[in-house]
Length: 68
Image (tube, rainbow, N blue to C red; front, side):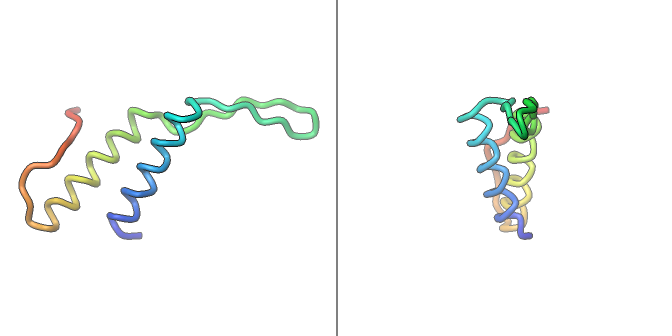
């Protein structure tokens, strides 16, 4: 998977979490379970890392990033 593909995947995950929250309820055979999605902070961090890696690979300078 390319860096750009990874970035797109992470950004889609961020959108899903932002749209539907961190946790969702799933019911299977009348058993209800709560499932946590990826941590939004971790997703933002990974997004920043991927943007930086893509920019560096292209020989660019500054990139939007979240400090640690």
